[in-house]
Length: 153
Image 1: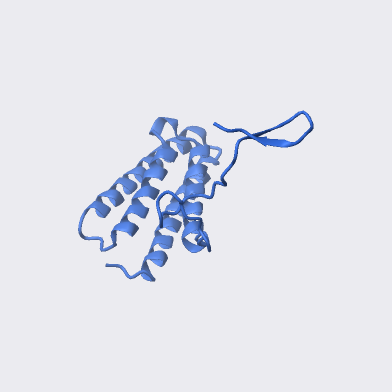
Image 2: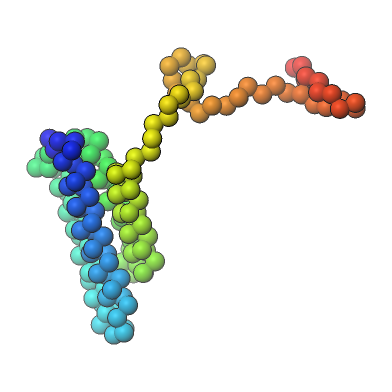
């Protein structure tokens, strides 16, 4: 298994390599050669998708030694990238930028995880189970003189 300290570094390197490949596609799209650059971008994005599918195959095999949580995290990122890029015919600069945003968010969440809640509220119905805090509201309405009156059911 990959040690916990080694996984984040290796994962960030993988994400930055994917970022650079997407960046090169954006650079190609900005070139003035319309037909030639768009064909090169389409081929480049198709190769990029193929690399993502090969990475999925590697994750499913036993050669990559990562734990289940790490494997699931990488798999989710790959699935989100493939969804952001969409089919080859519909891919545009916006979809490439959306894929880059996903990569950035993944690096940010890896390096700056959300701080844990210090005192999470406990669900009163199931002891020990954490749920978002919802205050107990009592049904009431205002009377003609402006006072609150409880509604009994």
